[in-house]
Length: 209
Length: 167
Image (cartoon, rainbow over all chains, first blue to last red):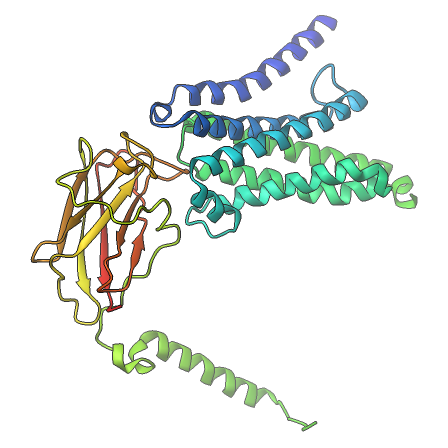
C-alpha cells in the first residue's frame, strides 16, 4: 500500500512537471525566437511560466499535491500567488519595452488583437486577489467572505489566461499549449467542485457562521 | 404628468414601425444618406494601425532582402477611380528586424491602375499575430493606417486596400 502511495506521489509530481515543463521546452525550440530580442523572449517565457503557476494554484488549494496538504499547501499557494504577480509584471513590462504602443493599446482595451483584453482582465484580477490577500488580515475578512471574493476572481483569472493563451500565435507549440490550458481548466473545475462539496457537507455549520 | 395610455395595440404598432424602419434603413442605407447612395465608402484606419510608424519612410525598390510580397490598391472614395502615384508606407516585424527599426520600413508608389506591390522580408508573428502595417500619409487625402493580419504565419504575401477621401 505504502509503495503504491509513494509511486502515486511521484507520478503526480512528474505529471505536473511535464504539464508545465513540456510547453516551456517546446517554446524554447520555437524558430520565432531567432527573430526576437532578449527582452521580448523573456516577456514571452514569463507569460508561459505565469500560466504554469496558474495551474499550480488550484492544485495547492485542493491539497492534490503530495507532501503539500492543507496548511502547507495554502502557505505555498500564497508564495506562488506572489510569484504569479512577479511573472505577470515581467510579462507586461517586457512587452511594453518591446513595443510600447501595442502594450498601451492592450492595457487600454483598444487593441486589435482579440486575446489582449482577456490577458489584461486576468492581470487585473490577479493584482486584485494579490492585494486583497495581502490585506486580508487587516481588513478582517473571514474565510467565507474571502472565498466569495476570491473564487469569482479565480474563475476570471483562469478563463482569461486560458483564452488569452490559446488565441495567441507565438512561440508556444500548439498541442503542449492546449494540454496545459486543459490541465488548468480541469484543476480549477475539480477544486471548485471539491470546495462546493466540502461546503455542502459542512452545510449547517457554515450557514450559521 | 400626462397620463399616456399604453395598450397592447399601440405598443405593437410602435414596435412594428421601429422594426420596419430599421429593416428599411439597413437594407437601403441610401435612404438616410442619399449623397453616398452609389459611392464607395472611404477606408477607416484600423486600431493599432499606426503603431511603430516612422514618418517619411523612403521609397525603395524593396525592403531588405525581400522574399515576401505586400500588395494592394488605392482608389478614390465615391467613384472608386484608381489613384496613381500615391505613396504607401509599409512596415512590419520581419526576419530582418523589429517593427520600430528603420530597416523594417519602406515606401512605394501606386501605378496607373492604382496598384502597389513591394517586396519585403518575411513577416513573422509579433504581439501574437502575424501582421503588417501600411500607411497613406501624404496630405492630399485623409491619412489612413491599416494593420492587415495574415491568415497563417506561413503565408508569403499580404494584401491591403485603400479607399481615400480628400483631406
